[in-house]
Image (cartoon, rainbow, N blue to C red; front, top):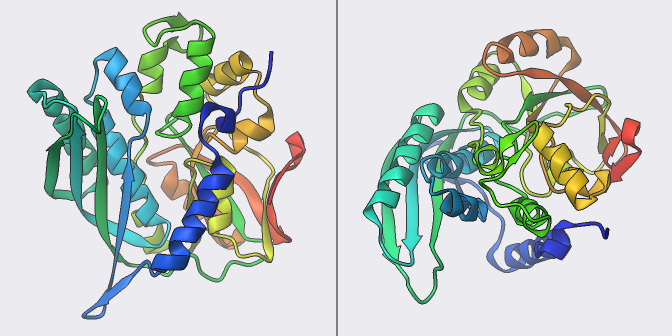
Length: 321
């Protein structure tokens, strides 16, 4: 069997990164607005093709949580506490019952993140949208300078994910469909495929904000699309991230890997592989950080910072630059 890859499924990460660079080259890359002494930041993201799974399962009450999560978790990476959120729901044809389920998820996500939904927009776009699309924007206030003062010997702590979260679904869906599965089918170890895939993205706001209020957090990475590549956003070019003790991936990742004949290299550059957030702290703060984090979510030391470049997982002989 030929190997399934994200690019073959239709998502070329390298090409996306080139497009982002092109956009930044024209628009600019300022990510903060200074207003009356406050730094205001915004994040925009959507749920992506996870919506296709929701449509097939006829279950839309969790994708609102995903929409909030993808935005507020990103704000944490630049030291911003999320405050408010607006959503954008576009549908081929307006359906009140579906919209109600989506609203339930949005409200649950807002409660988990400690943000207020201050507005939103709906659009009926029969000639553009096939089904529906859900996206949103979060606004936050910068409380901490992150990333900051990273140095060789700093420790990386990983926080466990809740499964796929909202990334890599184009590849995951293709793997199951090409192997003859519907999302309502069951697989040993994960149960109903669609129910596993629809587990909502974990929101890390409360534990991370509590952490940086008491401990110097030097860097934060939200592990989303492009997997471990996201870690390089918090580490400058003279450092590399060494993952000595990665999380054991959830069963769903192993199922996708086996069904798709996917290499470890491709898996770790596409999915979160069990780790939703990575934080960098000074070695002296590790025990206190773990004690605080583990009150809320499973967390452990996963690696360290060294001089060099890129991300490596020595036990699997993986290297990303």
